Figure (tube, rainbow, N blue to C red):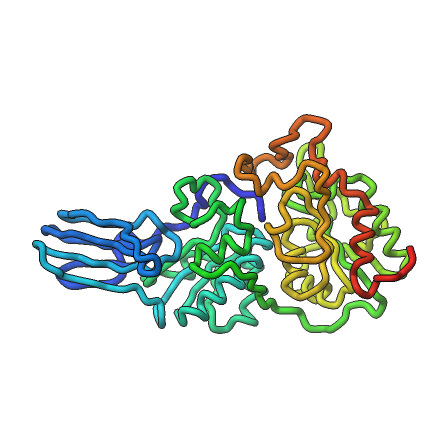
Length: 396
């Protein structure tokens, strides 16, 4: 989960005039909820959720636009009467229709957590899907999703869609209009699934892997140690050093594939750890995917490259106290110290401040700040590594 503005994300809204034409000057579509435009007249409008048989709106309308408050996927039905007589009924059906999903504001990990859900949504509804994503993610997905139109700007996406949805993290959605659940309680994958009306199932995306095969002959482990905020780092000052020493003694090369060698703000700067081989830089994600695909395993944080390792099927040792384990994908090698303060990112009492790189809502400015990972020892991580099948029984 990347650190972004706490407000509803600044993505383009649907066109003012609904895209579809009905009888008697009525226009309607399903962009940002169900929208119905009515010319002057004596109308009564009912909006229903067909799956729960719930009436969401039922009012007399003289003219104007009616828009549902719920903007996530619902199977809407529109019922309109004029002068007390039935006039127009329509059930939403996405099959063969142009549908837009916006998710560009998310980070790398968000995109990878969400896109398997998006792809399954397209398959389920047999719609003609366009998805707005980050450019680096588009390059990673286009080769393996030819049936989904992937673009990076609103201009490329165009307009006149039958329906559109925003798969994002909504920080202040108290009324649950943009997502049926609070993202902090749902976790990244489930949040996307429920926005799109899917079941709570993990759906791993396919990704393009750069050709070239195994990049090293020797056995190697990939690590990624950088993150978008300090609470995601492994804040134990000896953790990486001792873990890398352990791995190298067992004959592994340790390859750091972070983008940045150094990352931070103000007086807080994080360097890649001593002893790791520096393969940082602006490599395409497909090239990082190649390194990850052939690695014996990966050690990372609650960040984008951990999600990329998950996408390519590499065993993952995930170090995080900032998030609850169900916030990310399932891995048997999750490392968290339940004896320390933990999981503030998934605590509905804690409002994330993306502008604060040092955000630590419960322990800020105390000697317990960032103890969620500072109290994860190298030995706890090493014990977890030793559970990986190829390492079981290997003497330390």
